[in-house]
Length: 341
Image (cartoon, rainbow, N blue to C red; front, top):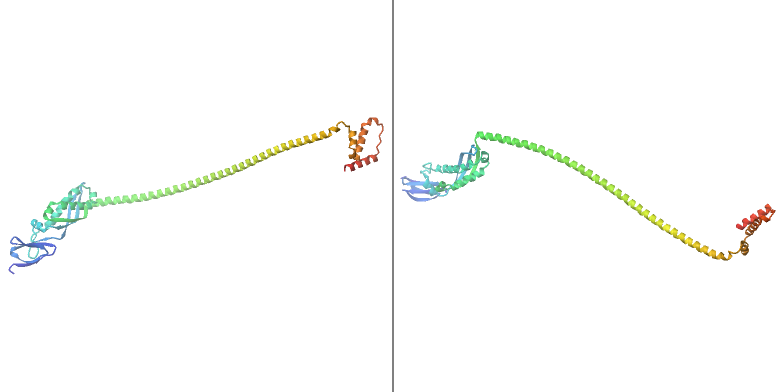
């Protein structure tokens, strides 16, 4: 109808409506009528978007690998982007040119450029393990890119999904890894067997140490018993010595006692002898006959008979003939025995 059209955009699209080269309206999510023959409408995506990438690199050991991932970005300055690329749309909302595709290609080129130096400084095996470092390198490179700043693009995140070597190198790495894993498995078996041998050795050493400790303890017990027996023998010997010393001391005292007693007896005898000597001194000058007469009142018939026979014996040279009848002798003997009784 006379060139008048209606168009509507989503809230994530920044719209700029030009009429005869002059900006009529702009903003996100606009809906309006316009006169198509004299109007130009630019629609710049203002939300976040993803750009998938895959590029090849060469490592420091001259091995090729591919880096795959996704760049999350946002067009922060739509006006600035509209000045750099053509984002005009037709009446049905489709882009008139393919300039919108240049955004992702320029992002990928900048990511490739920022990654090249880092990957080329690594060997293949190192690069395969540096996913996080490569992500950080790409993000830092994109944020520092002047080309992206001039287009008003802000990189929000990088997700490196895979780093792959060539098919031949992948098979070689798989073989190498398989062999390394087999070696590790063999080493694990060897270590396990060696560990078992070491444990068995330790067990035997522990058993031997236990036996040695038991024998040492038995030796200590035997020595202790010997020491105890020796101490007992020493104590017995000490008791015997003490008893012997006590016996010797007792005998010495006993000897001293006997000597003292002998001395006392000797003195007592001397005293008695002195008394007797002094008592008999007056009778010393008397003959036995006189003494007999003095003591006659105390003499027995037997004493008198003995005196008579003594007189006969002293005068035997004067006696020519002496007759003693058996009856007399028997009577004298009986009287003598009765006297002594």
